[in-house]
Length: 128
Image (cartoon, rainbow, N blue to C red; front, side):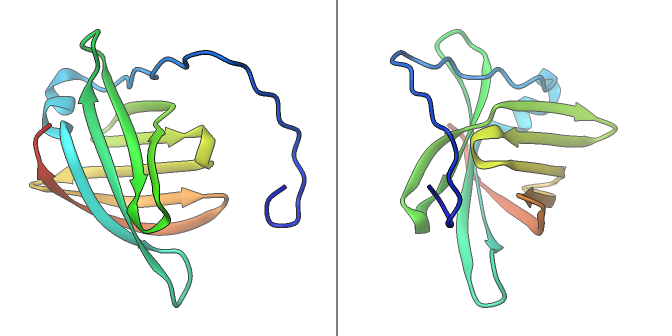
């Protein structure tokens, strides 16, 4: 139950593999590392978020989202793609989609979560 709404839940024991993000090498090499920014979740509340892009043990390009202010780390990106200069990232578990462009050391665009649109302005913090 969350926010007064009940949802069915089925759990299965095991390891969930990382989703491989379908982003060309020429772009994912620019994304590798941490990107930090903040989003306004209400008119009075802003939270920090971090996108982490890594190569896993199989050398696949994968991504995670952290929200330090909420104590959340490692939410997996469930999909990623690249089209017409736009990077599109999805996290099914968070009902989130981010769309943006790399502009130097910034990733700028929009995050939509559960129908709410927020400005995305992330700054690259370093390499993995």
